[in-house]
Length: 407
Image 1: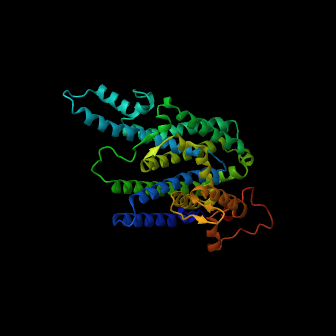
Image 2: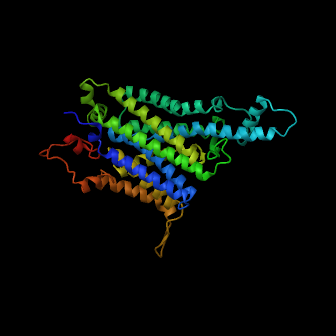
Image 3: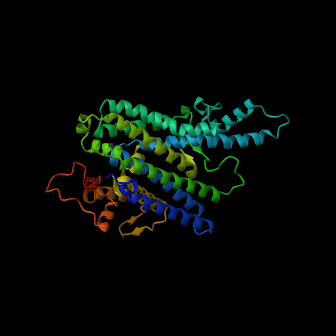
């Protein structure tokens, strides 16, 4: 007898309910001034990171592909929407400035003024070709999806058709990220080099709207995107497609022997997760206000993997929990709000020691709690591994194979 979608995914309704309650409570607290605008932005950015962690969990926790380059797609999504935000905002400023002259400004004069304002900081005065669609919000939104998706499609096709797997694929994805970051650091990249794009928190045409309201809009959008992605990915992993990608993770050769297109499944998952991560970046950077090539540093993608591991890979809710917990703790420790600990011979400043603490947590989770924080739910709900008379469950101990064996 075939079970219903909700029966196969009991965590879905719980997650959606918790997300809805969290959104309502945050909105209430922000409306009555109980939390600051900056904290609302922090929560909105955290939801975006949770969305990126969901994508990472699908490709790593379920498909077994450890990608160390997905934050490149995250940054590309931010750059695509940032180009429109910066262009449209600068256009308003230039038009207002030229309005004081005696003659009406021509379209060419406006474009030259925009180019000088945006690229004067890197010694240029012309709009690069890649900014050809920056004047159009619909086209830039299309690029948010199309550019990272196309890059992932090409990279994945080349890698998977060559049957690159394991650590070699991880190194290749990291190399892709590093190459893209080094290119964007150059002033002639067309994206202002090391200066990046700034002022993204200022929405064009909404000068009369306060940042309090704008921060809530983006928070709502981030929550809606996270809920929609969780619903979609839950549906994907609960069906036949999810069973196939888990089988590829556990025994790729056997799945190929059974006649499945392993490379096709991998390519679809790689491209889909790249697009989801890019959408997360497109929502994140207008709340952050600035994006530069440092956001593409390979360490960022490693952090993404750490969040998923700490939360519990192979569990969508685990990825969300890991990203939320680590992101909020990181903001607290690195923001100077955590009190320093004097030891007499030395003082522990958490701003300097946070990364050490995070690394130690990752090592401890890997060694002693491979199911991560999500594994605590098994303990409290009484879920245990089935009695398989000593037979192995598979090579991956952190991917819910005990539960899969029951299904």
